[in-house]
Image 1 (cartoon, one colour):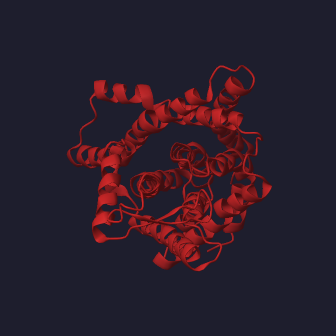
Image 2 (cartoon, one colour):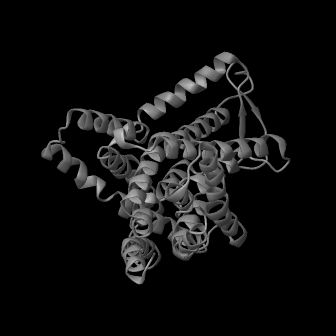
Length: 356
């Protein structure tokens, strides 16, 4: 049962994030320390240095030989369900948008499991819950954040090529007018042009440490747990000096972004509610389907559903800001999601106790 002491532990884990957020906000809004260009530079520092090292650090210390593969399978099914629904919506609906499908995927599937999830799930289900939440975070970093990074890079590269391509370059790309500035759709005219675009995307990803930090981390985890040796202290210290700043600098960057917007709720009330519905209803519902499909039951089933209702991933905002896709929606989802998550998660816990 979750007591007041457990709630206090969750608040202790969450409050420092808001301190970093307020410092970032105040440094622009009140103290005028940073210019917009400097704010962008700070976000790039977070995106290309602190977050990759943070990702490597936590993936390198898991034990991949003790993972619950049924739980991971349920997680994969839930995310594939959401991908399928969003793809059909973008393809078949008159209001469909591939760019909004990307953002909706982030909102429905990507969670901030380590900061909020670990203390809360530990209070609810003990060490079993912690292990499953950490496993979920590792899989999210290896597969789903990498997939998100690929899609964002594909979108930006395709849009960049289309804006620099004239009608005479018919052998490269044809551009089909989009519905608005954020729904540009690039149509590749030939097989050669598609692979040319893919080559550019892969080259850019090869220079992005986020695309392989988790792969290197999990590779190290396999090797270290297979042959039972620890990371050299000089290597670990070199990583920790930056990785410990990962979450804090990400929240600081979000505060900078908030300060450059006209309103604190930059995306408006409608999109805020839309984001909350995807995060706290659609995500857990899809996870429930996936968990039941693979036969999860008992506490593992409950943990699977609750961890899918954790607050929005901070990394998803950093990527959205770097790639210029609905950063206002993601920042609002992170900030207000953490505020409303505690009572919602306790409510989920109480309801799920009735499941056998």
